[in-house]
Length: 639
Image 1 (cartoon, rainbow, N blue to C red):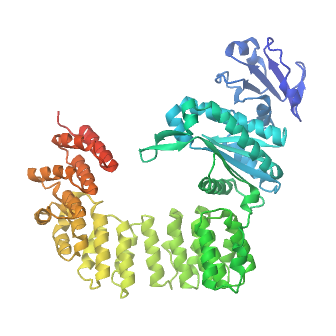
Image 2: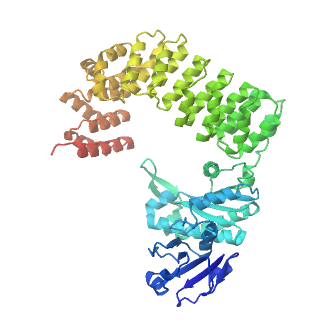
């Protein structure tokens, strides 16, 4: 590629473009594919008469100056050095290059990262590295976004410097995904040395980010996700590296998902400032576990326990061990446990193995493969799982229906609605359950049929499933079959579902159900009566209010909590005083319930009592009281 480099005459630095391989710098009179305008401000651009050139122009933003709006014929390129400008030129030989650089760091952004991932997907000797900063969010909140930006920019420069020193010029790629997330590709055999260099370099760099007091303590105090003050250690680096080609990961989306999984594992193992997982650690076989699992002299139950423990551990490096056990074992039950664990571990590199297991002659293997695919897969696996609804083994088909609900993608509905003609009632039940999870209201018709089934287990499951559809129609169906039901376990499930639905229905639509709800309450077990009162009192029925009054003096704090909810909207001033008095209850849940209800009563006279609750010893009560005061002030129409 021929490039004409135009710069301000006052800038006498040696042109950096001469050092770029594959790029020829031409003189002023020669033809060029691209013209690079190097300038620091609009005045310099005008002095160069940049708009008089007919060739495609790019402006290189030098240092950290903001971009200039030059003309429609020019592309504004964010770059920290000439090499990054050339990278975009070389990427755009076939078409006009589109700037895709992060404005803060000047590094290639998401499109360039995905392109690089595609290029290395068939290069086993090249590793994809994902790096981010641990505990960066609390730092950002304490020190401010300007300091946070300075950290990210410094982190980017440090990574670039480390890659240059370890890998050499042109032997790596560095991109900025966004925020504190970075991506790099480098030779696999350089990863361990690279991570060591990054580890030592960051510990030195970090010294400039904190005050002397915070550095001496080794921690800062910030608010956590719950809004509570918490101590956080100083920032560190979480870095993971793997070869997409070696792990059989072909798409950038799956590579990103696998990297996220590895980073979660790495952070769970963090014991010092920085934590890294290298390709050799992913392939690491934990001592003795594989041999133990394959030793047929050991009881099968013990070996399966070890295998399933690996799946529940959340450690990514166990995935390789599980694949080895699966490939070497001939025992169906062992392989079944392996598939279960791979699914629990969500080990993406095992996706091909799991997909092949869907065609196994043994139904136990197929069932666990469908379950694992539901745990690991996303929208791309919906069709494969949907086809398994026609499996001759009913347990495999049932697991397929369950997995479609677990994935939660709406495309699964077209398979769940079109079950095979010979579908068992258990398959229909599981399909209805998944349809309800996907908010398919048409599933109510199928659930109503299940409530008539002779098998009480099916009736119980249908009773619990119907609560996913929180509509008056769902409540009407539950009440209809509650009074026909003889099994106490099923009736209890129907009561629980009714309570879940009542809380989500508008009170105006509940009035027509008040009589039947009262009859249901009379048949409700004592352990659920208080909760039933709290929910059903929203109908406005005087019977529920009187029943709640009888329970005001209960010794149980949980009962007082529910009674508070039942009496709140009766309209009686005495009941309002009772709700206010619960702010002093010895039971924290009762105080919190009172603070919540007072915010819904739209009466500004409650603010004084809520103000006292702002000093409650329980943080949940304090937060609820604060939200209620704000709600009263913003929603109340009184002057």
